[in-house]
Structure formats: C-alpha cells, structure tokens
Length: 351
Image (cartoon, rainbow, N blue to C red; front, side):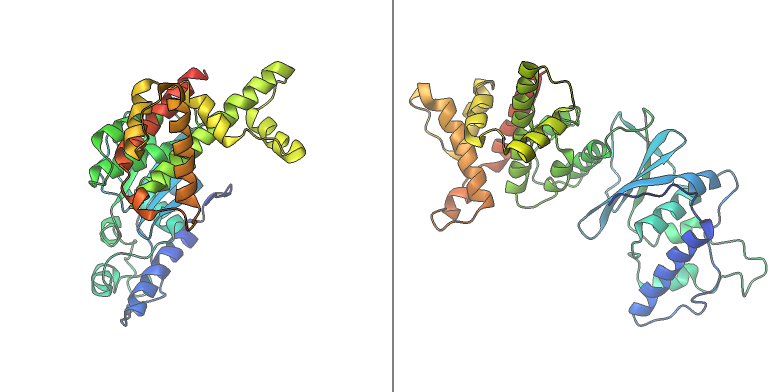
C-alpha cells in the first residue's frame, strides 16, 4: 500500500483510531471495556512528538495476516517498523532503535491492525483509565499497549533516505526467514543476501519479498525467473538503445517498444542467450536439480535453459500433460541457489 500523507499527522485522531480498534477487539470477543469510547491516548513526551506529528508514511506491506512492514520518512532518514517479526535482525544497513511512545502511536494508527492479546488482557491493561473519569489522567503508558500487540521493532536507515523501499523490505524479510527456520538454507540465504545489494532498477525486489515466506518453494523459483526476465529485457533494450543512440530510461523505452510495436524479447531465445554467460557450475546445479541429461555437450546449455523455461510454464500453467510428480521431485533449494547465482552472473556481465 502506497501512502500519500503530506500534512502533519493529527495526534488526537491517531489515538482515536488505536483505542477504537481496542474497543472493537474486546466487544467482538463478547466483552466490553467499561469506558469504551471515552477520551484516551498514549502518553508522549514533547521531545518525542516530532516523529508522531511529522513522520510521513511512505508505504506499508502486509505479509500474511500477522506480519507488516511500514516505511516512514522523517528528518531526512528512512525508518522501518516491523510488526510480528521475530526481532532477530543483524545488518549493516539499519540501526535498531528503542521503540518509544511516539513511534508506537504512529505505527499502530497507520498499521490499523487488531491487537493479539485476549479481551481480558486488553481490559486489564487499558480499562478504567480515561480523561473523563480521572482529572489527573495524562495518557496511558506506552508499555501497556505495547504488550497487547505482536512484537514491534523500529529501525533507522544508516544512509539517509532509502531509494527503493522494496529493496530494504527484501533485506528485512531475508533476515526473518533465517531467524525463523524456514526452508531456505544458509547457502541460499547468503546468495540472496548478495542479490539484495544489486541495483534495484534491474531487480524486481517487490516480487521477491513475499515469495521467500511462501511454503510452496516453487514461488521463489518463479520470483527468480521474473528477475531473469527483467535482466534479459534490460540487456536487449540497452543493446537496442546503444545501436540507435537513444538516451533515456531503459524501462521507459522497453515499455514503449511493447506498447507501440508489440516488441519484446523472445523468452526461450533470450533465456538461452543469458545462460551462455553463466558459469558451468551453475548450469550443472540447475541440470541436476531438474534432471536434465548432461549429454551431448554442444547443446547442453541450451537444453538447461529450455528446461528452466518449461518448468516455469509447468509451474504457472496447468495442463493435463504436466506431471505433478515431476515438479514434486525437483530439488527447489538447489535450483533456487543456482538461479540466484545465474542472476548475479548475468547482472555482473551487463555492467
């Protein structure tokens, strides 16, 4: 979800959103907070309120029902908030911050998520305290609300404003997969981490982000295939632009070629051309993962490229002739590791 907020955040309205969601969570469970609908807010200090008021939500991504990433911009820095992630996070790109009441209020009001606590826990933490019944009320302590939600973390970019939030999301998602013990191996994790450092104009990180959480391992293969599609589109378009002396954004040119002339690189031929630039080990790994015969040598690379293309079609399109057993027998981890190396080889070749 893209956000277009340019005006300062209304702090009163933000708190209303949060406490209304808490009231609804309790009532939907068959209970009721005694002071439902009364004036309540999260207590903040003057020094913290700058973020709550002025941090601009740039984008929000939901991953399943319980995980979210939010991207804010504030004082020439990108901030990333994670909700429902494990919290184990080690990277040179971001600095973890202590979540304060201002962060929490901005995050909860923008995320618009229900609490994970039970109605009884919600009533125990926030029930009975409000401005209407207590003249000395100065807001709820942030910790009382923090404990009602899935784990919330806040990180600040080490290098100012991040150019592509999808690339940042990919780094965050990768760390989560390795921390939670997903099917992704350490070897594949390291290859994907290297991929996370590539130019985002040539790598569709938005496609990769959700695929690495999918229990269906073929999803990551398809996401990587999309990366290869982007690379051969880039390679073909850049070559054409150089021949014609065109100076423009390659994506703009590629888009117009397809719109105006219905031209785009032929997938099977383009894939074979790219695979000729790839190291032999990667070709052999793909071959063994999807059971391509290694002989004869003169057509080996072309047959591996064709096998990848056919597998993509089998995975995406159902046909009676496609045998499900063949797909289930594939070593997806090995295939994805090899595909990530293919992407790196082709990317470096195109520099």
